[in-house]
Amino acid sequence: VTGNVFDMSVPTYRGSAEVYEPASGKFHPAGPMTDYRDYATATLLGNGQVLVAGGNDPSGSTLLSAELYDPATDSFRATAMTTPRGQQTATLLSDGRVLLVGGYGNYDFNATAEIYDPMNDRFTATGSMAISRGSQTATLLPDSRVLIVGGGDFLGGIGTLGNAPTSDLSSLVSAELYDPTTGTFSPTGSMVATPK
Image 1 (spheres, rainbow, N blue to C red):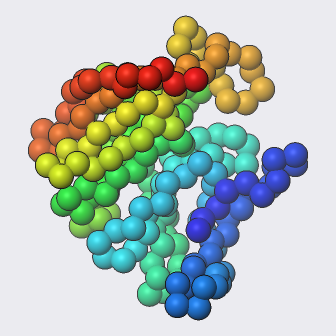
Image 2: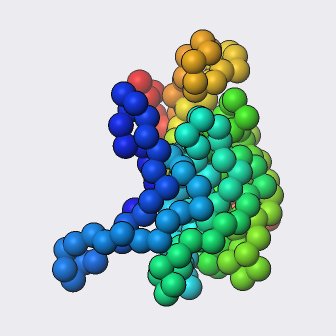
């Protein structure tokens, strides 16, 4: 369990982490994170480490950083993404890489995506979605493609999630498929129900 905001009335961001032990049913503190972050993703890698990526810092700025938690040393190590993002999805692919998609960054939702490869500890850009979105779902399919569904975007104007007024956040019914063999997204069927 990593980061997050403690109290929204007086936002207190956390740079701490905890580990849950299923055998005892208890949590215990883990080594401190390298950044304070909220709206990050956490992905268990095949080597037992956890990739914690993106999110927002205490000023509300979207982070370009990521970090790796190593349970063997109970410590975090910093690394960097290609694009600042928060409210993105992170999906462990069949080949052990991690796909990070969309999210909020640079004062708007984005359509970009990137791949983290634990073999060389690097993020690289991959194809972009047809539609900008954040807070969507991402599901690994049996054929190794990833289904990206819904989420939200600022339609009709660029906005910030801070104090500046902006157009309303619109829910999306569209969906896209990511193919890791080609590194491309393609539109697919839309949801039937319109999100509220």
